[in-house]
View 1 (cartoon, helix red, strand yellow):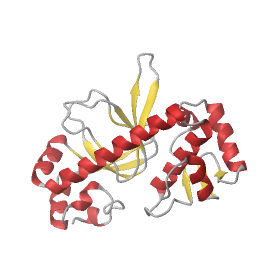
View 2 (cartoon, one colour):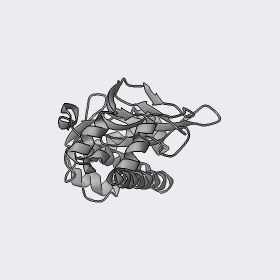
View 3 (cartoon, helix red, strand yellow):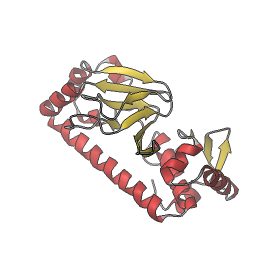
Length: 232
């Protein structure tokens, strides 16, 4: 592997982890590292031949603009996540950095060639696409059926899981990548409701807020029970 791959923090969890060191080294020769500032766009809906990428660090949102000009956040991308609509002639949604983010990017033609060359990579990307689809369906179900507290607890639970360096436990502390307005956008809640429910989760002893966006899990089991999520 190249030096960049050897030191990549998501080398064991990204889709390219299924490749041999030699295969990953060959693939990395076609890629480049890109850093986005908060609010910077990776690509916009309608872009032709939009780049594909693996998120190394940070957080991204996938969003669409409705007829009235309002943004709807459709999903989030966490480290090791893959961004790009394979086999589509153009991008269907905007992808924007929520925090400073680092990505490993590839031209569409290079990913297409890699899929043809490495069947294991094609299968890994298919599994990741299925996971993303399930996550999107879970969010739709959550916003349609759950009460405000459950929605917010589930989102915080998911942020803690994404921030963890292990699949066996939640991160004890992390920064929320979304503003309260963006959280409300995702969950179908007002900013006031988000603020009130954060306070109630803190009063219940599930979390402790630190500064504007810092979250510490005081009682992960309680947060999990309130969220309805399965154990990590």
